[in-house]
Length: 120
Image 1 (cartoon, rainbow, N blue to C red):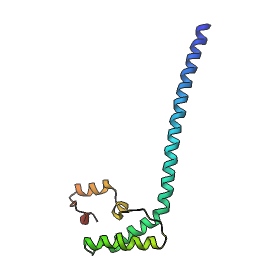
Image 2: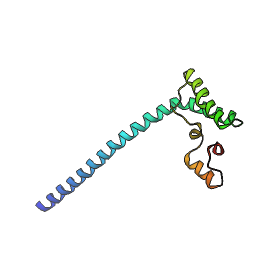
Image 3: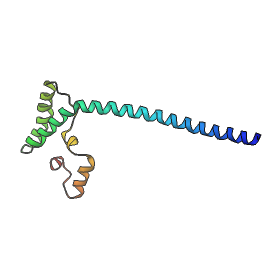
Image 4: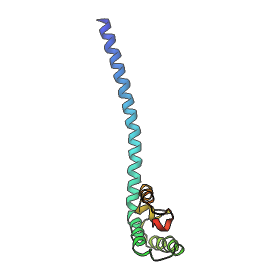
């Protein structure tokens, strides 16, 4: 009888240790999820400005030289968006909104030159 009770006690201790590890793991996960939710809410606020800049970039920038392209979106358009009080990501690059690094790498693997103007 004593052995059975000791085995049950050991089993309970093991379950308690596992439960403690699970709770600690979930606490870490909670903090990660909280951070992710905060970041997503912040991105949601900036999404309109990011999309506005990126759509203008796609629609209007192609006929211009690289120097004028950069001047338009970096100096003129972003200043206008900020001046109108539309939230936008700091130091945004419209190309990074429109395509991921993986997309760009895939295009380059298919033969697209690696210079920025080709990627744009």
